[in-house]
Image 1: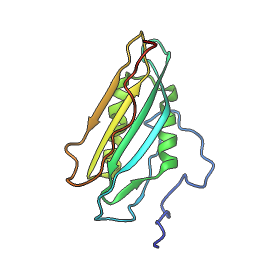
Image 2: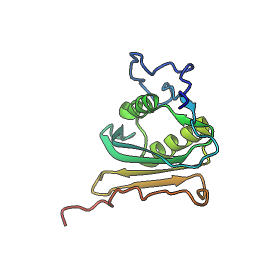
Image 3: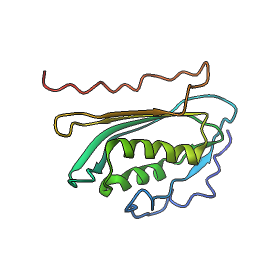
Image 4: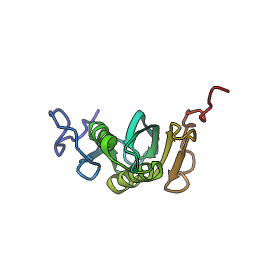
Length: 154
């Protein structure tokens, strides 16, 4: 089995301070180990946090990112640090969700990518944000994201 080339990575295996903003965060990638083979990669961040840009109050989301790699995979430690950089970042739910997806598309040039951002209620209203690059390639298994719609105590 071929070893993944990690020679260009700057964060994996290193002590790295958490970035203070998404703009400062460094996202890194590694070569896909099976180029030419279509498969789905799922990344789940069940404890994502950001701030309301008006009140400064915390917002919480369960984020699921599915993608079909082209030549690149996202390096997971860099993704963890990137997502953590939103913790003190003020932006609306829709902005955070789509910014994450667009940044990954720019980095990876995947064959397909989708994000489901399931935000917990603010003011009694949950906001879920969904975005994808287009139709997925034929014949690739893409499971349901498995996050139930928000249901209160009813």
